[in-house]
Every structure is written in C-alpha cells, then in structure tokens.
Image (cartoon, rainbow, N blue to C red; front, side, top):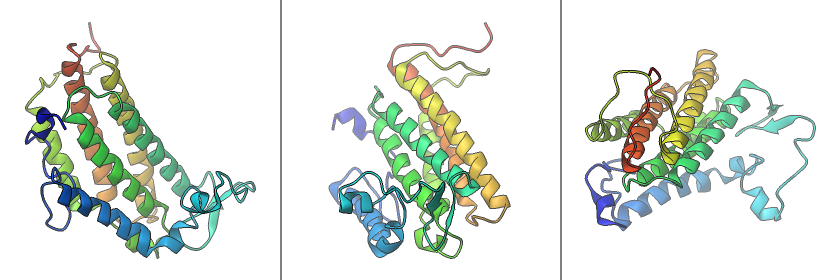
Length: 238
C-alpha cells in the first residue's frame, strides 16, 4: 500500500466491538471474522436467499424458483419481486455496485479503502433489510458506531477540500462523477428504507441514518476526487 494511503484520514476502518486500527493485518482479519460469523451462524437462512451461496454449491447462476415473480426473504415465506422490501434490497445492491464503479477509478489513495469499507457495511445492511422482522436481529450489524465512523470520515475529508457554497454539477472527474451517481442511488436507498421503517417492516433506525451519512460522504469524496484529478468542481449556476 502506498505510504499516502496510511495517513490518519482513514479513521478506524473496521471498528467493531472496541477493535481499532484496520490498517493492520490483525484488524483486517477481525473484519473478515465479523462477516464469517454472520454468514456461518445463519448459513441456512442465507441459502434461502436466491442470489447467495447455493449458486456456488450447485455451480449454477440460476434456480428458476423466481420464475413465478416471487423471491425468498431471510426467513420464512416469499414475496413478490416488486415488494417494498425487495425494492429496498435491490436499490442497496445498486448503491454498492455504483460505489464499486467509483472505487475502481479513484485517484486519491484515501478514497478506495473508505469506499470498500462502506460497501462491506452495505452488504450487511442489505442482509438486515432482507430479513423478516422475526429474523432481523440475527443480521444486526449497522449501529450507532458505524454511523459515527461515517461521520468521522466525512469530517476528516471535509478539511481537505473546499466546500462549495452552491449546488454543483457532476462530471469534473471520472471517479467524482461515479461517486455522484452512487450518492444519488444511496439517497434513493435511504428513501426506500425510511418507507420500510415507517411501515414497521424494519425497526433499526440506524439503517436510515447510515444511508443518510453515506450520501454525505459520497459528496465529499466527489470533491476530493475532483481535486485529485486536477479539476475544479463545476457549479450549477454559471
């Protein structure tokens, strides 16, 4: 890893249950362990999720079980593919894909690790949204500590860029434009999760808080990437 990427701007990536310093191998293993616990302890639940492990087990990328227009939840029962919960899961999937597109093009060495950590959080957030209410507790990972981590990243990066006083236009750098797209999709995912929360389909308020803060982080990262590409950020007004 380049020395620039080791700067303190990457604050406590992977913090969970008091573990700090994700720039060490030990902390990276802890993050992986968290994910393994979620998957391992609830493998039977995950194998009900049509896009997860059974594809690998069966060496197939389709099961035909959704041909009737329904899909499984993490728990008992099936719902239509246009159900509000599935719409939220799909939008979260879009958000992670957009973040991945941005990460592949980031120039500033601080951007990529932060985006990757956020993608891993979204993966776990998606699991909680996909779980039935009685099973959601099994997949609870996003909490106030993860929201705070996003706030710390955003605050630290904000000190490195000039914050515009007006609305901006995407497109001044490739990575910046991708981050703007990711921000817009994250905001749509936030709206979908808020809807589920208001309907008491999900009960963890930190899910919508996390998505709200993630959209702010994407905005700051866009400014950072524009700077890294040597371009000024365009304002919406001439």
